[in-house]
Length: 387
Image 1 (cartoon, one colour):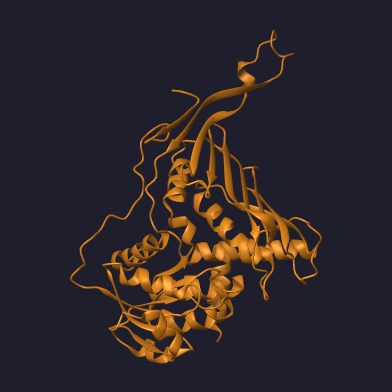
Image 2 (image 1 turned 135 degrees about the vertical axis):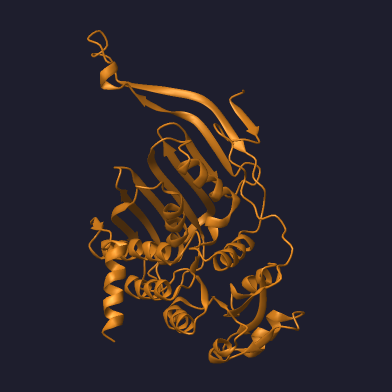
């Protein structure tokens, strides 16, 4: 192999590139309604219409005329301003929520109480306590609660997860992401809550079993006087001693979308702005001589050696991630299983965000990640029982 190659396979055992091949429409399609006709709602409408296992019945928004404009040619889909009307429709088995985050808890809870499966845009709610209540409610009623962590359904992130979980890169040693651009300064959240959920959801998705966040520290700055952090650096300490670092920034004149995941065997470099080689696997790194292999003759030498190998760019099929989101939502409902990015995943991301916000208030101090998921869910169940 030459130093830089393009290949159909990543190093090691072949893992098929994930994809969702076209499927014929099933005999029974899952009735679904989309709530919210703003920025993300039209994308959900289009992909629901193009998912064979789903049948879109409603688009609900406070502005009915906006809904009608979004629907356009979809004449069989009804527009409404009444969420209660949607929930009362027995044909609707599932609801996709794409409203501002402040409305998520109320809408998702009402849908679950009405016996509907729910797909909700991130963040799942604005607080971990509310998210835990929704997760507990969905699990108690046997309903699917799925978070739209869209990046986790791109072919590149799915391949990264396979390489990490399959041991191709060895033990995870670091995670480093940069998500910067000259972006829209949000009126209600800081840059951490606006951009970091993308990277934190990816981190949660790709970490191997047994490795989890244990502490969070964050530093931010507001150089333009916006009243909230516009530049931030977030560090997550992992249970295996590794660090995950995220840089988010609204003020950069250039757009950068890169993620590096270093392992004891290989390092993954994901550049989302490079369609020719979104993912490159580097067989380069640092090796440490095991203590049991040291002899008296070499103890005085450095224990570190550097490994220089090839670089491979796995072939990835370009697909719209949201189509895979819809397919996974439908499959989880049909198969009666938890989706890949379930409510628990949304809760874990919220716990990291809340810890980061507290760290900002404390000047960058390391904050332990919130109580474990089982404890959080137990507390949510106890609160529900006392109502």
